[in-house]
Length: 426
Image (tube, rainbow, N blue to C red; front, top):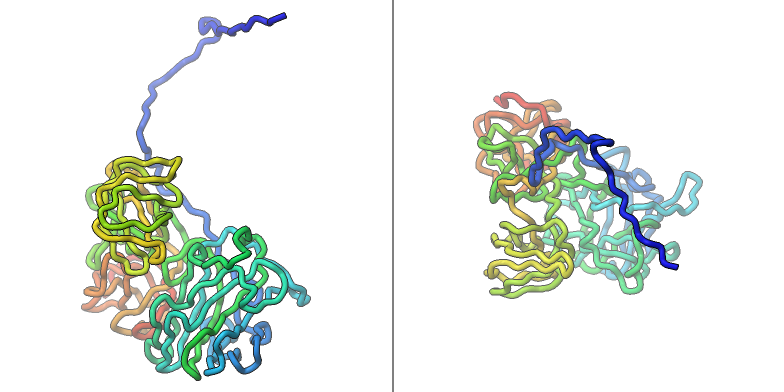
């Protein structure tokens, strides 16, 4: 016997509903939104105990205490020899009792560390690899899960054995064969693999850290907010940002802009290409099109920083295919080609910035003499798309300081700066 379907009706005269004034806004901007952030040093990553690190072959690729740390009580020194090819120095994560202990790093986006080359030493791409493990067992390089070149470009001692910072994006690591299904929920250790180089080259390492928000020179520690990007502007990690004078949105700022508000740590719409593309192509496949929309975008090679504006006329979120104006340059996965939305009047494209807190910044043409000195973006050194250098007041800095130095620093040295402290720099 079939049962008849019934539709239940509601009589609003018996159940009154009041509807007051209502307004629907497309792409609303609800104001600044604090962002989740995290940064952690793994067991042994403070580099205070050289005994935590092991040489695969004693003396072939050596590790020792540096004697002059950047953070804490000690740092480690890696030394290459002619016989150093294809050997490793590694760190096993252990608990206080010395038992092996994995670390869950699924939340992390970057790994970074302080580095310092020996006087006059040159490190080329291919000399040194950084790697991590996702399985317990032998910690030699042959058993790595992920690896990446420590240096994407030639790195030379900047002078006076100054400390620099290197930031490596975990998504850019090459996944080793047989580890394709591994995730970062169990990371058992990390290491360096010497493939080539010069006999006697040294590299000091200190404070290895995994984190979620980076500026290119280390983690962002402080208040990270999201704000809409101004019309047809583009912003990526490391850009200096300022409030637009004509709208409640942000844009890359020059060295004379007193509206500086922070350092960009992310453009959430940024996504990698899923395939190589040639000049003239009008269809581009990306890894994830969910945050892309019809409008203007910027496509570029992250390795060369060259790129161009394109107009997106259609977005297929099923196939992750974009219909764009014909591109003028070829883009490849090998060069880490990416695309990201440019700002629009609707305010639907947002960027994340650290607006107050500690960030690492590069000292410009003059030293920072004392802790607490006011610092400004250096005049003449600012280039859109490049992390700004800082200066200690005077005629070669902008009038308004962006923060205060938390350490003294020499020319070409990276130091932490406390952002969000405004005032005259002279």
